[in-house]
Length: 210
Image (cartoon, rainbow, N blue to C red; front, side, top):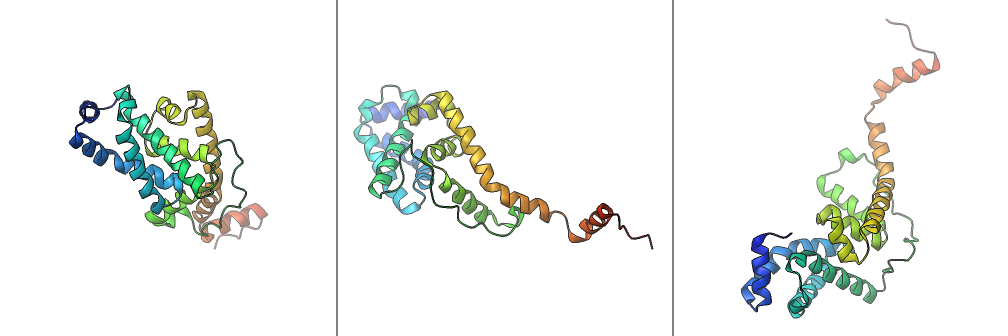
């Protein structure tokens, strides 16, 4: 269910209220833009797709029969526009296709806890880019846009069980990408000074107390 004020705005928008459309645009352009940036792996294309998305929303407002489903309808349009844009730029878009053949780019050789916040965001985006589109989109819709499983199923035109399966695989894949950095962080948590006695004890050569 969407908030009552959204419901009223949507009904007013469908009745031809231009102010209501502007209000909906201002309310949802941020989430739609964030979704498009991560789907398109860049900001420049995302800006154009957001504008195209809301143009389609405006032109097809009579097709929204259930105002409660506005959010999933909006993201369905955004998703379709993203896929269209990817096709135009000859990027991988087949939701049944293989994963990227290119190897994952080199990772920073420092533990995760030493990264700045902006660097961590860039790192997550880097790993998101390695996921194939059908994994990436469900992860973005769930973790960043907080859509329900039912809403994601509507957006991606699939079943709830399929959404849950893709989310599980996407999270597992993302965790695999993160594992080298987390390993370095765990290793870095043990200083050489604290590790030396353990190594000596393990070899049976612990020095006698002074």
